Length: 126
Image (cartoon, rainbow, N blue to C red; front, side, top):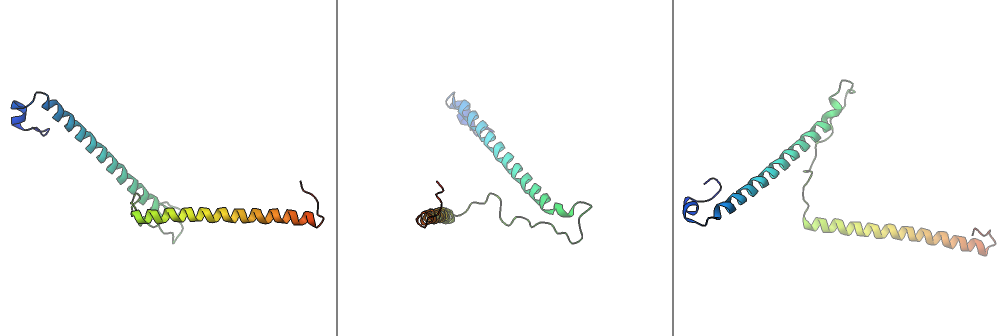
């Protein structure tokens, strides 16, 4: 009964039903244990972060006026909205394009400078 199987199913149902109910129950317990482990780990992480944030004032040689660091404003694993993720991705792409353009412009100027030096009778660097 504790695995979710009714009295009637146990006594009058399929002989293999008990085996399947037991397997499902074991999988449920395993999943709940993993969730509890994750919650405990996350709780430990937040506790660790809180202690690290206040650690500047916890030792004997802290200077007067030392203040603890600010606690996290957002949860560590907070999920962003889908729209915000798309905006962030577009910004990364645009920043990459701009960085590439700046590098190419600098390379173009350096190359043009080399050729103008050659035309004016400068030394050949090649």
